[in-house]
Length: 130
Image (cartoon, rainbow, N blue to C red; front, side, top):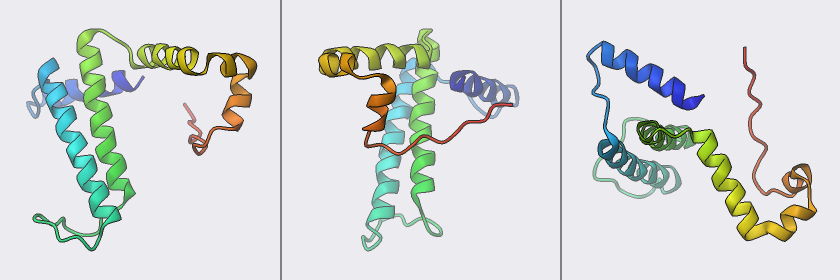
């Protein structure tokens, strides 16, 4: 779903002549550069006493970090689309391989609900679809 949304916006922006749709190499290059922007945002949020060569206008927060992280994800989705892969399919297959390889015995003993109960990450936001 997120890939379709990104594709929709890219088509819209390209139709307006406001953006060039990147190829695989460009998408990966942009993704790497966005990782640097994520780290810069984290440094600005967590180390406010550091003197920066290029200070930002106004305060910065984890909302800014989240936006930069989305830029990384967006470029990853663009690359997956170019290669003909679906993020959910690739992600599901990868998580299952990790689960089987690293946690096979433990994973088989507990249901997903039981495993989730001991997960250290916060609850994901509830998504309401129209």
